[in-house]
Length: 221
Image 1 (cartoon, rainbow, N blue to C red):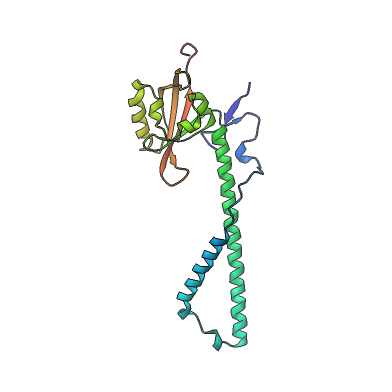
Image 2 (cartoon, helix red, strand yellow):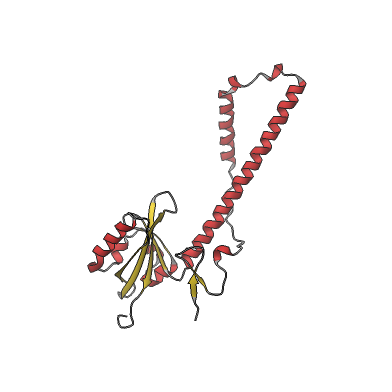
């Protein structure tokens, strides 16, 4: 029987016992950053030339500079160009690291052995991992954009709404119990739910991470 242990990288993630956490494994998969198109480069050059034209009056008249002063000016421009190249390389490095970190997080989220849902302030499901789709008996595409309340037993609706509102009003993790309907066969799921406010993946809006554990007893199934 496979055993899981709490992941040291996150209080909400689990790792298979005896294995290295995926967040600490060296992974070769990495998204490639999109190369700018010819049109984008042309547009960028046009903007640079327009800016140069606007600021041309503030630039020194190089025609009055001596050869030594011209040589010093060229040297400064070359140094500045190298600095810009180094800054660009550092930015690209950071972007690649962010992409790799996002991929690791997505893998941990998707393949965690517990149900994860991400909902917005209205209770609409923004994300769902594979375990959640299995537990709830519905495909991921059918979950996204739908209200989580639609899966909650009618008698537990108030419990859900009150606790979800409280999740967005406190930085603490909240825990409660409620019943859910399994969509594939209508079975009742007695669930322990944990919720904590977090930041949305696509923007800076506030979302909530919902963790669902099936505590249904054998007599209820």
